[in-house]
Image 1 (cartoon, rainbow, N blue to C red):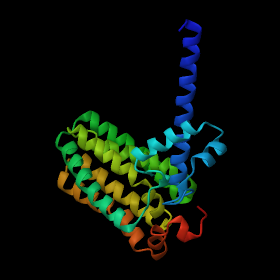
Image 2: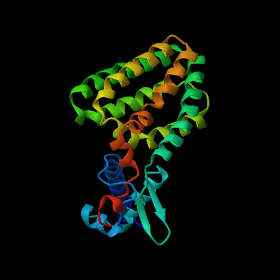
Image 3: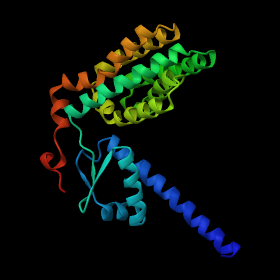
Image 4: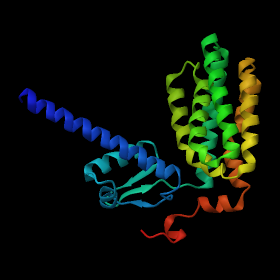
Length: 246
C-alpha cells in the first residue's frame, strides 16, 4: 500500500472510531436518561437511519454498551436495553457496598497528603454541584460527574487495582437507579449531608465511621425507590407493558 492510500485508510479508521464513540455516548445517554426504556428493543436499522451511519457502526456501539451492562444481546433477536427491577437494584446495591467499603477502608489506611488534597478538591466541586442541583434539576449530569469523581477519590488510595475496577463498573451500572431516585427532590439535601459526613470521616482517617456512613449512603437509591410506590412500580414495567411499540 502506498503512502497516500495508507493515509486514507488511517483517516477512514479514525472517522469510523470517532463515529462509534459518538453513537456509543449518545445511546448511553438515552438509556441513562430513560429515553430508551428497560427491555426496549434497539433496532439497528432504525438507529442507523436516525444517526445516518453504517449498520456496523451502530452494532459496534451497541456491543460496547453490552460491556457496560446497559444493553443485552440476544442471539437471532438483536439488542435490548437491560431490564431494571427492585431485585436487581438490591443485588447491585449489596455488591456495591462490599466493594465500596473495602476500597474506602484501604484508602484511609493508606492515606497520603496527595490523596487528601484530591479528596478535598473533589468534595468542593461536588458541593457546588449539589447546591446547584437543589434549584435546577436539569443540572443532574454535572452532579453525576462530580459525584463520580468524589467517589473515585474516596477509593483512589486503595491498593487493589481489580477491586477499584469492579467498583467503577458497579458504580456506572447504578447510574440509572440514581437518576430515578433523584427525581424525588426532597432527598437531594439529605444526599449532600451524607456526602459531607463521609468526607469529614475520611479526612479524619476514621475508617469505621466512614465505611458505616458509606454503607448507608449506597443504600439510599434503593431506599428512596422502595419507599416511593410510583418509582417502585415503574421499575418493573417493560416497554410492552407500558404500551410502547416494539
